[in-house]
Amino acid sequence: MARAIDRHRRGLDRDTLYFPESDPEEEACKAAAAYLGGGPLENIALTDSTTMGLGLLYAGLRLKRGDEVLTTEHDFYATHEALRLRAVRDGIVVRKVRLYDDSATASGPEMVSRLRAAVTDRTRVVAVTWVHSGTGVRLPISEIAGALAERSRGRDEADRILLCVDAVHGMGAESSTPVELGCDFFVSGTHKWLFGPRGTGVIWGRSEAWPHVDPTIPSFSHEAMSAWRNGHPPQGPAAVLATPGGFHSFENRWALAEAFAFHRAIGPARIAARTREQASRLKDGLSRLRHVRLHTPRSAELSSGLVCCSVDGTHPGEVAARLHEDHRIVASVTPYREPYLRFGPSIVTRPEEVDALVRAMASLR
Image (cartoon, rainbow, N blue to C red):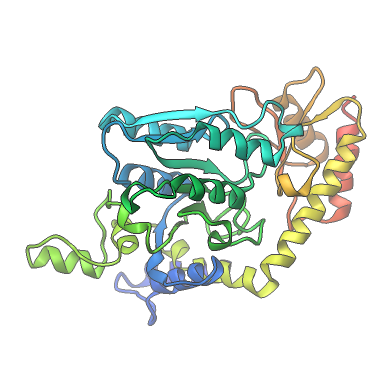
């Protein structure tokens, strides 16, 4: 992938007319569609990040004043703020439900039950996150999808509840596809667990769901530009028209296909198993330290690659700084009201490195 980025960068630097023989954006969409479970490449919109994808989706959904969007207290700023801005602009109603009281002991059936109970006749959209970046809790998306399908039974297609998922900490760490999860929209950046180029992302949507979204930023697609030249509104695949135009970091976007190809060559199921193995090893080690409190569920069914914890009497930022200074271990601090220390074991970490992290955490007593 790095070689592909460098090849495209050198081509653009050398010749302003540089463009690969095969359409690289089309190749990126094909690769994304294949990785995400098949289906037409026209179901993929390309973005620069998860935040951009969520902003485009929640700004573009066809909602009217009084329609309700249900999200959770646990979602990240990007979801909450995109929905707040939409509410200010158009008068939609945004409600937040608490899915669990203690993340470490979260229960799948309880999360589904709480969400189902919060749905009303005015609910048109449910906006959730697959793997919570603040706790590492992984939602049972397929069960949520089933509950919402049951709640939507008997509604007109225009009023069916749409399930929209921020998947950035699941895509690349888990092997389930959006089709298998049963969601309507699946939004993710690709530089995290997919280890793709920075400044790239995708929105996947069901063919039947895309007509519910209007473009927010003008597209530079052939369909849009041709319509403009001929003096009429653009017509074409909704995802294509929803892909923002303008100048992007094309060398990164054009290398995106290689990132998907790399994961498909290894096998998503093998990657998910390896990620789960590393995360479980870390959680097992941390749980034996009396001064460390684990906030991510021990169950692999309710967690993924993220592992969140706290150290008694010490701010997470101080812990992260000491780990880096004393052990060259990189940790992050969750940007929430109650911050936790966060680790991300994955296919690029080894068991010895996980064990070294546990020893480093033990030394913080």
